[in-house]
Length: 234
Image (tube, rainbow, N blue to C red; front, top):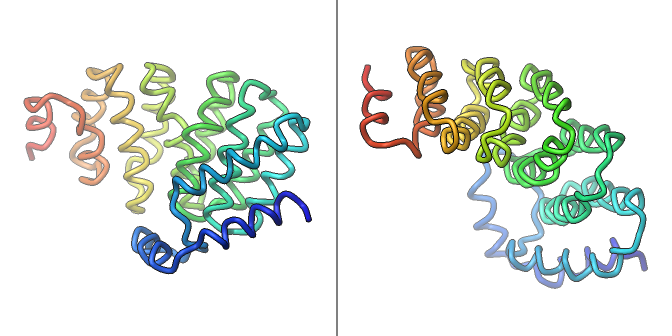
């Protein structure tokens, strides 16, 4: 029995119909769930990673790809965690792998955010020139690819990184009608405001007449009350 089959058996053993029903409430789109609590999924992923930690990076990423292909959210979470566990081994040649996962396998906001926040965010900090690829994603027809263009920068944004790129991506996504894209770039702006409050406030003020209210509220969430009130004035 392969390690992937063992993981799937373990997920089935820990599945629960009530957990599955509760999980489905959070998604408007159709998602595939076993119905396993997130903490349990993380525990299973860590347990089985011990068995593969000495595998080559290529072997680990190949296993991650197999998990992604199943379409099950819990398997995608394990793939995200495994790919992040080896972040100190990332090379530029790994970008096509991560790009493939975003463009072909991500089908919900939870899998998108888990992959982007950690795996892709870490990759971009190591290889900053690939931030330009996010600007191409921001123009995609695929809602998850567009969301990924923003949420991949959440953790770097909190560190004050990529401010110019963040503002450019927010500008590309500014009028997007998809609420999950709006929330994604609003979240990116909120994260950036923690290190660059004035720049993000200026962006909001310059665009507040056309910026969707959902994105605006997210963007100003961490700002002082006085700035929030000014941003919300009509």
